[in-house]
Length: 87
Image 1 (cartoon, one colour):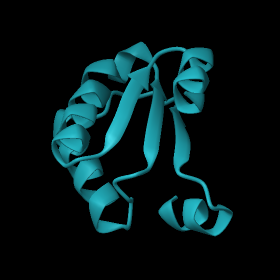
Image 2 (spheres, rainbow, N blue to C red; image 1 turned 30 degrees about the vertical axis):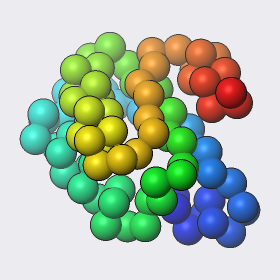
Image 3 (cartoon, rainbow, N blue to C red; image 1 turned 90 degrees about the vertical axis):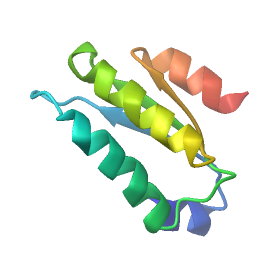
């Protein structure tokens, strides 16, 4: 995703997760670490839309990303996520 943002000259991304199964809590730390290791830049904004089933895991991932210096927010509503990314 970071390569696509760089190619397009964008610094905002919207990630929509509609997973049918529960994500293990340990995966939230792995996803945050992978974002950093795969070139996600600190000036990028990441809006995450997730179903309620995985909300706790996504909130934990948000905490890890913020701790690493990334600007991110978790939403359960696509419209609110888009609004946050624009402002």
